[in-house]
Every structure is written in C-alpha cells, then in structure tokens.
Length: 334
Image 1 (cartoon, rainbow, N blue to C red):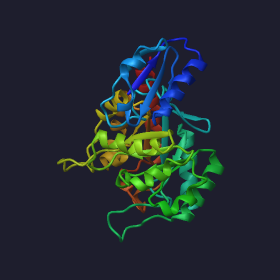
Image 2 (cartoon, one colour):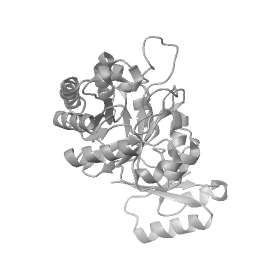
Image 3 (cartoon, helix red, strand yellow):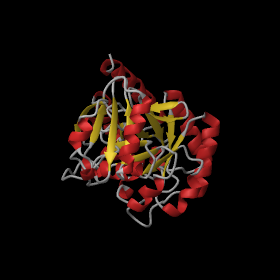
C-alpha cells in the first residue's frame, strides 16, 4: 500500500501519521520528491482502514500495490535512485562505465588494464578475485591475493573496485571493496542477500541465467528489506535456445525494469554474448535503450587470459567503444 501526501505537508504532521502507522506494526519507507511525498507501507496492511487514511487532510490518495516487491517498486519511490560510490554516481541520469578483466591474474595485468580503462573514460574497475566456474578444473581466481591486487590497482588509478562475492564466509575480506557484485549463480542465494542487506555498501546484483524480472526484483527486495537500499541491477543475458551466443541479451529488460523499479539498471554485454566482436554493438544498443551504465570485460592479452578471453576487449578496442558510447549518450539525453 502507498499513501501519497499532499504538497506542502509539514514535517510534524507527516511524522504523526508515520508514527500512527508504525504502531499498526508496519514498516514505512518515505520517498521525498520535489512535488509530493510517498509513504510505502510494508507489512500486514489489512490492519489499515484505507478510507480512514484517505480522508485525512494531509493525504492526497491511498493505493494498494499488488506486486510482491515493495522496497524496489517505483510506486513506492517515484524518483530514480542514485547510487553513489565515492565521486561516481549511477542512476537518475548519471551513466557509469565499469571495465576490467574477468579475473585478476597478476599485479602487472590488473594495474595495466586499470590504467588503460581509466584513460579511456571508465569510472570503475571490475575484476574477479573469486570466480564461479562451471568446471572444477578451471581457474577459480586468486581469492584473497586477488583482492589485494585490486586494492593496489585502485591506489594506482583512483578507480573504485567492483568484484564478486560468492560465499558469506568470505564477507569480511570484502570490507574494503567499493561495490560487491553478486553473480548470476548467486542471485537467489537468499541467506547471502540478507547479509548484504546489513551492509552500508553498494551491491551490483546480476540477473540469473534463467530468472524472470520479477525474480530479479524479489532478490533486490531481500537486500533492501534488510536495510541496504544501495542496489544496482544488472542485465547480463539469459539462457535461451540460441546456439550462436553464450546467452541472449534481453535489452527489453532495461526499460521494463525502469518502469517497475526506481533502481539503476546497467548492462553486461560481455557475458550476454560471450564473443568480443558482439560486445560493442550490444553495448551501444544498451546505451540507446536507456541503460544507466555498462560493465565490460577488458584484458591486455585476451589470447592468454585465464578466464573468458573470448569475450574480452583489448584496451584499444574498449577506448574506441567508450568514444562511441559517449556519442550515443549525447543523442539519447539531448
């Protein structure tokens, strides 16, 4: 249920209403817009007399929300959420480019790539220290050492770091990570999501291999309902019957998620296609489609990459793409 307050309501009267609603056992999420204030009621709203609330002098309207996701629902929060990572902003018209290798392999590699992507215009550095792999025989990351190498790259370039967490047991190691990424395979690891909800740290939540948009939003809800509202959604392709690409990039998810939710939505064309030459056109399409950012794999030597070299751009290729992305942004924001 949402309660829309009239324009110009005093803070005292608003707090009186909130206090009364909380006594009914409800959680109240306040969204303060330029022209209106929306109160999102979470809990057993059957206790609330909609007619009584609607008749109050300070209330403009009362509406029932049928969707199971509440905290991330645009009806609860009409304004776009802007997630801040240091000086970097994502959402609400702020576009971000995140780039770096699939996995951290050495200090030389990660620092070289970090400097190259920063020079090309990337605002954040991605790199996997813990890697979920389909085969138990594949390179699974440098783990704690990889996190330390990412910190070195951050010190060298000033770029905030984005890296994937796979296990609750490793959470302490991520205390100094700027953005925690939750990969497709962990999108519905609900115990992990609850723990992330206790943090004051941005979470990049990737859509699962075969999950619906509603399921993605419900996973975001787990994080937000536990207290952490700094969530960024990521469309990274889903598994279909297509046999020429690694996954199928669902570009329609971007405007649909923006309609359903106030959270920023970025796109990962690298995992969506699995083929380096397809990354630029899909990145440009995602930009034109209204994405709030891109996360792209870049490696200085893709032929010898320990992980996902086939979908990684070379630094010069990323630089050329970044220039085109900026040109598309000028058009779509004009």
